Image (tube, rainbow, N blue to C red; front, side):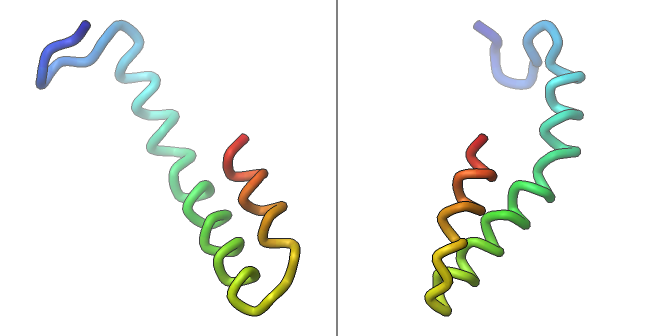
Length: 52
């Protein structure tokens, strides 16, 4: 287990991957929310894609 302020082995690489992919993930979630608000059934597909 890591302690506060330290990263486990592979931490910097994992963190950079998360940092790079986060904007795409949040974009898919926002598209899904927008489509759900207006009643388009494709919102579920965006949520599924964001979760994978």
